[in-house]
Image (cartoon, rainbow, N blue to C red):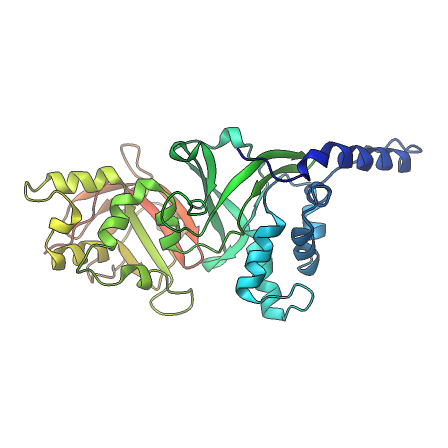
Amino acid sequence: MKIISKYLKLLPVFLLVLVLTGCSDDDDNNTPTTVTVVDVAVANGFTSLAAALQATDLVTTLQGPGPFTVFAPTNEAFDDLLTATGLDLANLSTSEEELVRQILLNHVIVGTEVPSSAITTTGIYANTGADAPGNNNLSIYARVNADNNNTVEINGGDGTTSAPRNGADVTTPDVPADNGVIHVINKVLGLPTVVDMALANPEFGSLVASLTTAGQPDFVSILSTANGTSPAPFTVFAPTNAAFQTLLDSNMMWNSPADIDSALLTAVLQHHVLAGQNVQSGDLNQSGTTSPETLQGQTIDITLPGTNGNIADVVDGAGNEAGIRAVDVQTSNGVIHVVNAVLLPAS
């Protein structure tokens, strides 16, 4: 891990001053001093983060009991954001203040303290404090990238070692506070779309390759449509790499998605998407079958509870069975559920 500037070197001194000052104030009643994630951020010299928290009335929130996991962008990262967007923290309109507030909340896991040791090479998902469609909270994805010096990458990383992403790298992990932990990151996290989350997780590499295969509709643009604008929001059933490999192995002429007939591949991919719907697992019939219509035009059957270790069972348009293995990866324009087989339409 890279070490961030001189501020972190001064952290013990700042914290000691904070603690001693608090103890002096509370000597009469012996009340212990609490050093919150806000105090630690200020002590580290993250003035831009502190100003943004102040401008959006989030200081009091993060001074609460928590616990919080905060991914704290550096001043340089905030400067890049402000330059790119033209935002002025001292003069935000109502809509701009809400945007900045949601961006900041997307850096905070509320109610859970996640140390870097809990983040694996396969990755973990968690919910942030930011709002998402359907009164849900945005998800965040963190993983250790063994190909990037075991750097912890958030939402796919900062793009320096792979395709450009809407994420960041952790440069300094595990800065402690009494009400949580801070991980320093080198970029401000954007509000992720279903495309961003698919790009972030290498387990969806085959899905991304299929969506971007020559001759396909511009699925990236379609699935990046902002929430509230048709055809968003989306519910995406995302097959794993192993699921796609099973599909390719079913035909000796198929070595990659590009070998599949273009119209067939389009229909298959559309059969994994519900348009205009943000369907989380809790929205399904919890003791029966739900049969939504896909973007391709045919329905799939989703049955709860699942069998054979599946959270839910799925029957595609062709009558094949699949299982939902992970649910409710929430993005700003839809939700992703992970399936263990490629869903095929009837024709």
